[in-house]
Length: 130
Image 1 (cartoon, rainbow, N blue to C red):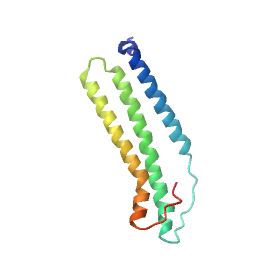
Image 2: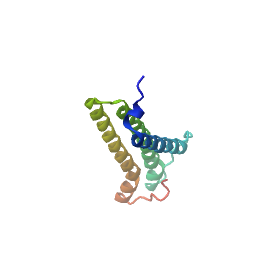
Image 3: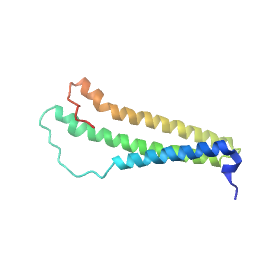
Image 4: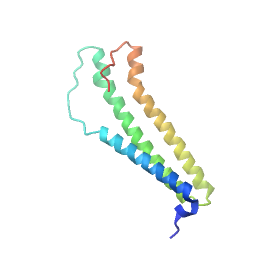
């Protein structure tokens, strides 16, 4: 069995280890904050409750799901880079995967900011949105 890490040299090994460490810690951070939600009823007494009780939980869930999927995509792309050897098709596929993961992270950040934008457009109180 070929050992792919030694083929790339010590700098690539350090970079690969750093990538794995950063993204595994990010994955732990995301899963630590994404605790199992409790079932609760949604009570909307006025328009400002919509942002707090409806928009914030929906966009927070979208944020955490997209971040989780993006982290998995980056880890898969790093694994694909390691297995690529001299195959330019695999390198291109891994590069596209990382590009799509970065786009996913950008969309996740937009989902995190969406309640603020919607609240400012409709003059809603979004101060209690986590």
